[in-house]
Amino acid sequence: MAKAYMGVRLKTLREQRGLTQAALAASLKISPSYLNQIENDQRPLTVAVLLRLQAAHGLDLQLFSDDEDARRLSELQPVFRDGAQDHAVPLAEAKVVASQLPAVTKVLLNLHARSREMEERLSSIVAGEEGDRLAGDLPSRLQPYEEVREFFYVRHHHLAVLDELAEQLYETLMKGLPPGTVSATLLRARLQDRLLKKHGIKIREDVVNRTSDQALRSYDAATGTLCLATDLDPGQQAFQLGVQLAFLEMGKRIDDLTTAESFTSSQARSLARLGFANHFAGALVLPNQRFQDAAEALRYDIELLSDRFGVGFETIGHRLSTMRHAPGRGIPFFFVRVDRAGNISKRQSTADFHFSRHGGTCPLWNVYEAFSQPGAILTQLSRMPDGRTYLWIARTVEHRRGGYGTPKRMFAVALGCDARYADRLVYAKGVNLIDPNAATLIGAGCKVCDRADCAQRAFPPLGSTLHINENQRGFAPYASGM
Image 1: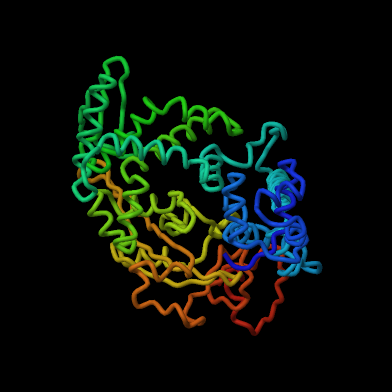
Image 2: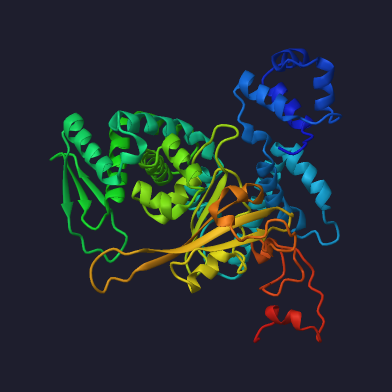
């Protein structure tokens, strides 16, 4: 962690827990005067003090993560720029708000979101799109699937308990077997055996000619039969068996997690419940300790990890981006899946990346270039407008369901991490990590990116003033009919 002055955040935490300066200082084994200096930003919050905070108070280190600060800053920038051409908030001040005042940041983001929602509703009414609908009948800002997706992205640390429970079950199923001897086929057999002996559930495979993404798993409680699609490979079948076990053996825990959060509809709660079960199944197929050890030994080579555990490229990338690590272990990854139209259907992270919330993403990002080279692994060193640099790998994946004539679904998936971890990945080979000009300049989308000289810009950033020069070709992307 870089030298960080986080006095306001530490003081807020102390007051929320009802501690005096003397009491907190005693628990951290420092003097009250030293703590007072930290709270007044006269001294930085050091790693040693931060680790003592975690040990003494069960603190989530993510609260003081510079990754978390970067995410808040990226979300605040369009807020401070929207409609404020003549009174733009300087970047230095925005950084202070993002790093020192997380609660204020949340309030500002909520107010900005509500403001934009009301502007969109008024625009729709003026355009006649709403007809005679009453304001109370207008849809909520987030669809259920968007609400759940945002929950898993923002609160990824809540899933650590499911990781632990899945790992315990895995060790029970594979007791006595060394890591290198476990295969997806063996795991599938052990899961089938547990379902039959403990729950009386028989497994049946069925051919389903799907023209859409229909259910891969169907459970009939009346007959005690679990039906799996025959076109699933052993790793996918093990995952589906794990999902069923999650509902049977972890149902109470999953229900507690679901009801503890303020989901706004029954559909969102159902989607969240399925999401928790899916996470448990993923942690069962790729258990934390064994998967982490293998990933580090293989330098995070996804293809070798795919061969080792019998699951696909996308599954490995997704799991790497949802694991929680002990301090000093593992790499915080970001994972995204997009289609050719730029729709983001998955985004997961154990840290925080500047995923766009205002529509559009950056065409210079290598996840889109992957479509032009199907099956090839592309690497990219990229830099965001705030100066942070990342290493990204991207590749296409195909989802085929059904027989002849059934259209295949192609996506591009990308896995990234902060450049400071890049030398631990096999994909850094041949990438210039030293030259500051070697990185591709990308952004979170044209609407929130302020790179004025970008050749790929589609339209101006939100709240900006466009200065028109008829002789300047750079204006062409915004002009109608060009």
